[in-house]
Length: 78
Image 1: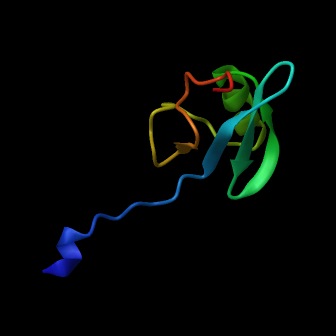
Image 2: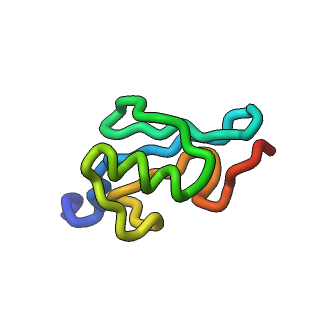
């Protein structure tokens, strides 16, 4: 019965890395492990994904977007 006790977690196609210092601060965005650009806001994440042919319907969907170093509202360094 160990098969049913282990949840399946599929990797998200989009990874948004932690906030990087800069003027303005930015977050690195990757699709399938490849760097695709820098985002300064949630809108930038949506636009970068769209350029790669990925439509994001829900930024909270962990199967689509993985937020590293803070969630979708984190855009300034700590």
